[in-house]
Image (cartoon, rainbow, N blue to C red; front, side, top):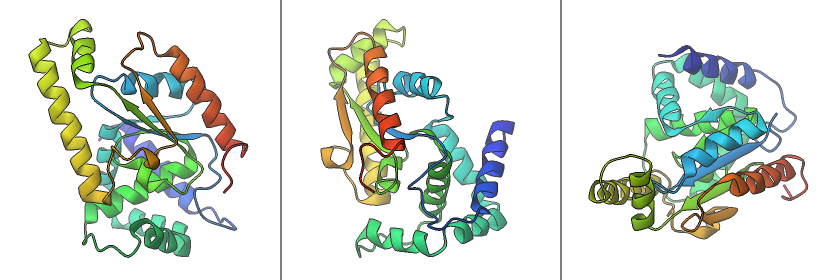
Length: 229
């Protein structure tokens, strides 16, 4: 377990002990952005650059999975996070699932605690259905897409194997990501209404303009100039 993961968990635990008049993720310390992306669409590059621009942490799906896995072995911290969200968390869960029974899932429950905790702290969260978990929070939810064939060609030009290999990888990863979000949260990545901004990067050679746009939107939402929460 890297020091970075342990540091994030420690910060989450500390945040859970803070008393809030309304203990939700509505007013995070720093801007919060969730990014869901197709393979080869440039979403990872955009997420990294955006975190640098906003000077906030960048939590990719690997980090989120590691934190969730680590917390499953630390019931004391999980209880602390539960106590920090308290009743607001329970009410949020009812709204999220709208009465639909998706069955017990310890990993999903832990993942939601992780994402909701990071939603209090601020940062760029990539993948793992963070856009669903934070859909009622003060967060900018972004979907980065691209045609599989064009995304595959982009990856080839970046030195990542042959076209056929990259096309197959794009189709497989996009399917697996969509399957995870559906099975965990009953939400479709193809549902544009689940995101605040949907961006197709097929005709974009450089992503700086996208980063600039998202930077402005993230700051506006964090300052309360866009969302009425």
